[in-house]
Length: 406
Image 1: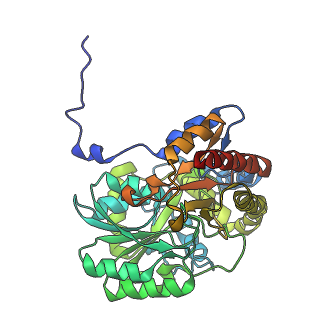
Image 2: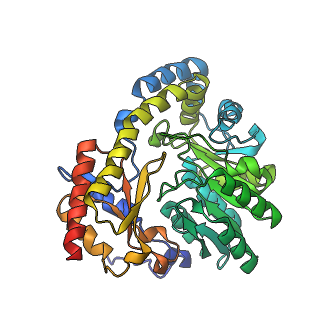
């Protein structure tokens, strides 16, 4: 029987899609003695298995077999009722009601829904430089054009945002991760958040605020979300992948009722609803006041790893790099100093040399919407390796860089 090729039948949008550099690198992680500093994986030691067993017993008693039935697209009523108090926590300070919340399959699905809602081919989207690779993957299928907002050690520069809006008034929306940004780990300080909020209100622009990490703070004080400062101009995304377990795949968005209702309509066509059982797990997790205690455990495990990675980079890398010392989240970002561009380094060559030594990291260029603007940079994850492995991995990367500089 002849093999039929469907390549000439697929939609044109597939040409804009590509595999994740992170996922491709993670294929190496199964190798024996491999040190994976690449993916944003939580440590399984942080999974609250005993708490989940308690939650399952509660769910069985409370819901019985009804929990396995089809559910409402907007979300389980019990979860929608408890989420407003969660969203009011000091790391978000978002005012929400069940009518302004839509549950999604993780915040990644929320990004796809937003893309379906707003992006026509050729539309302009403003993103931080660099930005979250997963957002670019979600948006790329709808063929937008990107404008990159300049950033520095304090994240998005408000003046750059305003200049871009003036130059490109047709921008559909702005996408940002203000707290412990992926990939850089940077935090936009309060004064800038206030400026950004004023700018989007002044020009009546929509900001998509992705916030997967703000609960996981190791030091410093929590900051209010931009949504709390400009609620009518913001879609706020949240997830429980980092604070419960990734496999539950429960996240969502807070938005105006108009946007929320449209999101629910789109989600109906994608998957009908998010697992009732998993939503019930999150609902009982929040109702039982487990979150605060579990966050302390997560932070106790991750904080010394972050410190170890930062100090190891300072010890083993040449001084032609700058490195973020983030106050939370899961990543450290290393980039070549502007005045060190005379050192010609090839990031792909470095990846090959470190993979040969059983160490993986993610090069920085996939995180740039316009990769020609990418500096020699890398994203390093510290949450899923021991301190001993982190130091060993950083030493191997540093040694490879020194050899490339010779």
